[in-house]
Amino acid sequence: MNPHLYRLAKSALFCLDPETAHHLTLTGLRLAESLRLIPLIAGARVDDPVTVMGLRFPNRVGLAAGMDKEANTIAAFGHLGFGFVEVGTLTPRPQPGNPKPRLFRCIPQQAIINHMGINNPGVDRGVENIRRTRRFHGILGVNISKNEFTPNREAHQDYLACLRAVWDVADYVTINFSCPNVPNLQELAKADSAADLLSLLKSEQSNLAQETGRYVPLVMKVSPDMQDAQISELAHVFLDCQLDGLICTNTTTSRCGVEGHPAATESGGLSGKPLYNRANETLEAFAQQLGGDIPIIGVGGITTAEDAVAKIKAGASLVQLYSGFIFQGPPLVREAANAIRKTCAAI
Ligand SMILES: Cc1cc2nc3c(=O)[nH]c(=O)nc-3n(C[C@H](O)[C@H](O)[C@H](O)COP(=O)(O)O)c2cc1C
Image (cartoon, rainbow, N blue to C red; front, side, top):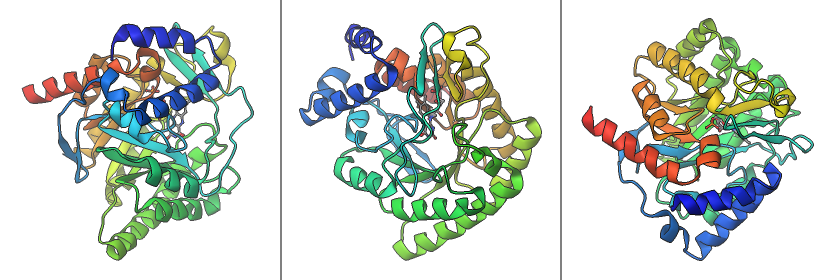
C-alpha cells in the first residue's frame, strides 16, 4: 500500500476517538474487500511459507487477537498481506466489556492503553461470522477465554465450551489467560492452576481430534508481567502438558515509557513500542526454558521490520502485529514479512 495513502487515512482517523476509528476502519476494510479493492491497494502477500505446529503458514507475520474481535473482517485482513489472522477473544456468552471510554492512544510513544474487557459477540456468533467471512487462504487462529463473571473455579468449563464450539473452524486455538482487563484472570497463570486447566484442555483436544479426525493445536498466550520464577514454572507445565505453541505476550500493566502522558493514569493494558523490551525479555526467557520444543509466536511492540526480525532472532517462529499496525499501517505487514524472509533465507 502506498504509504502516503495510509498517512492521509491515518490523520483523518486519528481525529476521531480511538474506538470509533477502529469500527470505521473495520467497516471500510469489509467494504473494500467486498468490492475487491484491497489487492489493488495492498499488493500481493509476501510468499514465505513455513510449517509451524504442523500448519503451513504462507508467511510469518500475523494479526494479533483483539483487532477482529467479532471475527467478521478476516478476508480483508488476509488481503492486507497477513499470513495468519487471530480473531477474538471470544467467550461462551456475549459480553459488552467495560464502560467507554476504554481505548486510548499515546501518539508520541506509539502506544495504546486499553481496558476493553473482552467485549465480544459470544462464541456462537463468532463461529457464524467465521463461516461467513473466512475467504482467506492463510491460517486462522481463534482466541478464547472465560466470561468475566464466571468464577475462576469454573473457568475450565468456559474454555472447554469455547474449544468445542470453535474446533471445526479454527486452524489453532489460543487460550487467553493473560488479559489484564478481566479481574483475577491472571490467577489462572499460576503454575498449579495452569497445569489443571491445560491438562483438561489437552484431554478434550485429544477427544475432539479422535472424533473429528483433525488435530487443532492449542496455544497459550502469556503476560509480560511475570517474574523469572513464574516463567520457569509455567515453562515446565507447558513442556509436561505438551503444549503446541506459546504467544509472548499480551499487554502489560506497567506504564514504563508513557509516564506523564494523560492516558497513563488509565487502568488496563499498555501495548506498542514501550512494551517491546519487556515482551522480548519474556520471549527470550521462555525460548531458553523451552529449548525449541514448543514454538513461540512473538508479539509486543513491533513497529518496524527490524523489530519483527529481532523477535525471530530471539526465538520466535512467527510474529504478530497490533499497535504497530495502527501507527505504521498496512505497509508494515509486507516490510516485516519481507525482512523476515531475507533473514531466514540467510540463516
Ligand atoms: C485494543 C486492544 C485490544 C486487545 N484485545 C485482545 C484480546 O481480545 N485478546 C488478546 O489475547 N489480546 C488482545 N490484545 C493484545 C494484543 O493481541 C497484543 O498481544 C498486544 O497488543 C501486544 O502487541 P502490540 O504491542 O503489537 O500491540 C489487545 C490489544 C489492544 C491494543
